[in-house]
Amino acid sequence: MTETQKTDVVLDVNNLSVSLHSGAEIVSKISFKVHAGETLCIVGESGSGKSVTSLAVMQLLDAAALRPSSGSILLEGVDLLKASPAKLRHLRAARMSMIFQEPMTALNPVEKIGDQVLEVLDIHNDGDRKGRPERVLEMFRSVKLPDPERIFSSYPHELSGGQRQRVVIAMALILRPRLLIADEPTTALDVTTQAQILHLISELQREMGTAVLFITHDFGVVHDIADRILVMNKGHVVEEGARIDILTRPKDDYTRMLISSVPSLVPVPPRSMVAEQVLQVEGMAKQYTIGSFGKRRQLHALHPTDFSLRKGEIMGVVGESGSGKTTLARCVARLVTASAGSVRLNGTDIASLSASRLRAARRDVQIVFQDPYRSMNARMKLRDVIAEGMVNFGFSAAEIQRRCVELIEAVGLQAEMLDRYPHQLSGGQRQRVCIARALALDPSVLICDEAVSALDVSVQAQVIRLLLDLRDRLGVSILFITHDLRVAAQLCDSVIVMHKGQVVEAGRAVDILSAPEHDYTRFLIDAVPARDWNFRERIA
Image (cartoon, rainbow, N blue to C red; front, top):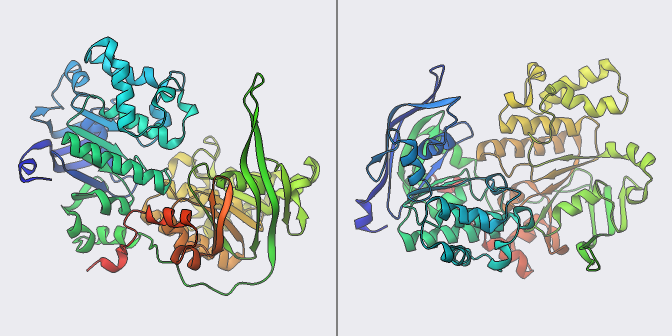
């Protein structure tokens, strides 16, 4: 950021409060400025008010629930809180834009990608109508989308997660706004795609002098892109300062706690393991037939794969989106049937079991999914969520009651919470309930599919400690799928690295992450943000 830009204030938020209609404040008297060409990162746990603040700036708050109750929001001198609907409509996209966390929910699933981006130009009547499609294609090229013409004519479901995110960025930037708000835009992306997206935003920022308000819980990203950091907790600004000052000399205990919760990329020392194997996979492969009307072809989602999992071992499965990680997990759990190979669970090949015999074997392998809210029935109390598997397997009512109390306490929650519904819990609490549900049938193998990727660093640290504790107390073996190599370094005993459906490297976590042999593994490690920065050790 140049000296000229330091005086060029694009966004000036002064004493902003956002309240429920009951009067309770969600955000209380916060103030900050964002200059041209500057990146201000807002960090804090879920519920701290980060997203509410960004939605208030964009004037997208749900009017039925929330309202700005005091303060001002100036965008290049225009008070957005006093602007008319027509004025706001003009400013959105043209002067201020937002990249939302989940691109699939930000895009219309029944409209082609090109038409959705063209709509932005049409609404603002920007430029010659005949030249607008070429402008969209040029923007797609700017955000490094492959084959822009194909993507222009595609629907959202036909693109990868990284491609959809690039489309949303293109839509946000096509009118060259002065302010870009990015709300967790890389949370669910693998490290390589995340690195590409961050480089893209930085590149476009330099070209356009855009002010960026970046909301994230990933301190690696904060380290790499922030000029200044704003820390929020329970609707208040805890502290604000230059990036290096906040990361190395935090003044507030809350900031210190957040930074100390960031896992290190340095693997934990290896521990001695028992020889007993609970899972043996040999030659497991999965292929799909895709296409139609005489144009069918075979897609190899998982090439023949071999590995074994010992009792009490945590094995990490890492790789980019599309590498075959989730396919591997679903084949192991027999949620999909492998095309070839065997999956021996406690000596039984579940890959070849009939449906009637498979039901009994399912108790031995359970899954914790990435999104706990979507994996629970919103209309069921936690007691019924945890008990569902036990009911299906004929446990007595008394035993179910006893086990529900034991399980919810085992994951660090109170028994009184059994009568709550999923929406009454935080994200971390919901994930703990999903872990309790998965443990209800005493499985030998627990599969965690990106179980901590969307959690705050503090909650993530709690879940990691919980999984380690459950491993030590119950001896459960864990297959841990993740794109976060920092988490893998702190949690896993062993690691397998997947690329395009193949295992390219496997071994002890300390060996794979400290001295990788395969070029692809080195490529993944090099893409980790702030990979050489140990956050806990750098705090003064």
